[in-house]
Image 1: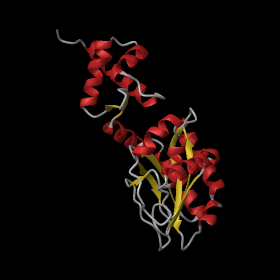
Image 2 (image 1 turned 90 degrees about the vertical axis):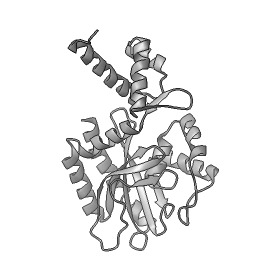
Image 3 (image 1 turned 30 degrees about the horizontal axis):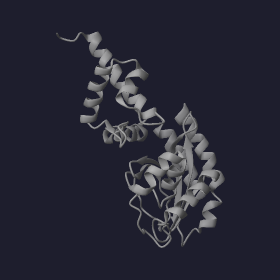
Image 4 (image 1 turned 90 degrees about the horizontal axis):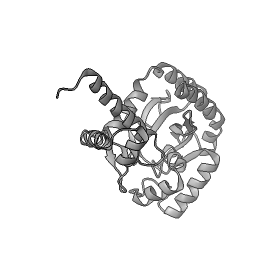
Length: 254
């Protein structure tokens, strides 16, 4: 029997509700739990989930729960990068970069990497070029460590042993115990730093940008060549970074 327009619209709504529920869940939901949560018949939920998995919008975790897939991650990043608040976001980053005199940007988690999705670069002749779209490691960057520190303890302990941790620069933390200690400090201070851990000769710091639920939405970072700006000097910009993060949070929540 051919579906009526009403039934077709209902299926589209269900797909969007499934994506919304998976993206917003604190813990991965099974298809059955998802059906109960959304009051969708279980056969319909399983069928829609299978389609979304096949198309790359959802994926199954190790314990059978549903997670955002690569296409959903890419869609989210594209929305952030081209949303209606892009001009205002760029204005905030430009003002921040002008005031502190260093490159500033925003990054979001993307699998086991951080993805640079917005950036304003300083005009200094000497600078480190990490363009929009760059992927950087979680374990040795300010933004990556800030994201790791935002995770619940059980989730963090599932991820840490699976990170491909290796020496990237002279000060990279490769010992898991030392990295855990660093993440505890970051969680307490809501501030992460990278003192030549990712790239020799580069220092960086990052503060969280939170959504309306108080959860980390993005990381606001700045970085500079150490020959021009020491780690101590860079950290003097933290109050201004936090102020800009509050402005950005008003956009996220608005």
